Image (cartoon, rainbow, N blue to C red; front, side, top):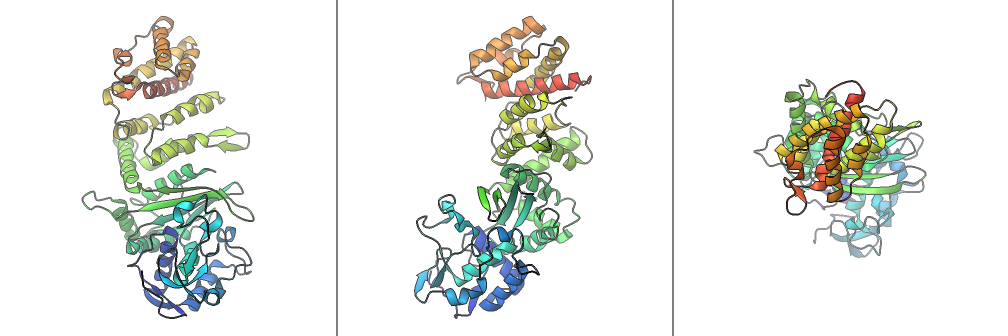
Length: 458
């Protein structure tokens, strides 16, 4: 690129020329929201940003203070630009540059770990005045959720359509930023792990399309359009970048993840609500859906262990198989609790829809597993033969699985459905791997056992 700044003291802000870098482009959007497009005075813009990012006592606001140290002097940017012409690593502009600092771009913390966003992992970044300024503005474009001293989650939405990103910032992100209780990110649930917090954020975000006390009607309509509410109008790309780390004197970055399938997740969210409304007959489906995922936690002394929820959230966000983690939660977590409870109302229906639509499982197979698993769990509770469920859960090979099934008629008097023993090529059962069939049968059976233990029937 040959574009250059118009003078030593002004920079050009244009939403028609995204850099492709999510952090800097969000900063350009923040600048455009306040100053508009065109040439802006560099010193004036720095003064404005510093004023918004500092407290009355002169320190940097939280959580920017996790990245910007007390010695940082962004106001010296105009004087620190080198005299020679160089190529900016972010936008490609040939102009005077400066070595990137944390106040401009927080991810200079570890080029080896986050090398995806670096032209070179062997040297620091060189930024032009515009990208450095936008980098500082980026600290005003995120949402965050803090969990005391254990974790902080940072969320940055991104679209290469910067005008759409500007609308999202004005109508959605800014209203959310006004809510400062424990962070600005609206989350249905959260914990110390990245994926559970991300799913909690997206579930809450999706709910604001239909009903919101924070967003205006314009904001709700915009959110619906951006998420692809109207299938006939293809939405512009939308991404979410999530950074999780441990707060302290300096931020200890532990995970960094890009999520690209937000539109598909929103469509899945709508179908889940439909299932809860029409099949389970729940009038207000969103809280019930939230509870389906929130429940995957176990009390450990004074806090909750949410590892299973994070793994299930990872599978959902990546459209992978969550059932091994649901099974592990039931057997390793829930079943060991005093007064162990079955899965929340509607859980099986939510995951059955996921199995059919995302994992393309045969509907007849799912019905067979649900029916037989229900009977198996009840019989186990009546007979006290709980070992059968653990034998089933612990099978590692197909022949072990079949041997466990062979025991059931003799020990419990149940007939095994023929479909479950009809092994196809590739060790599959009705098109699904035997491992997935085993896992789902374990889930249905253990859940029915827990229901029966409460003296109730599903």
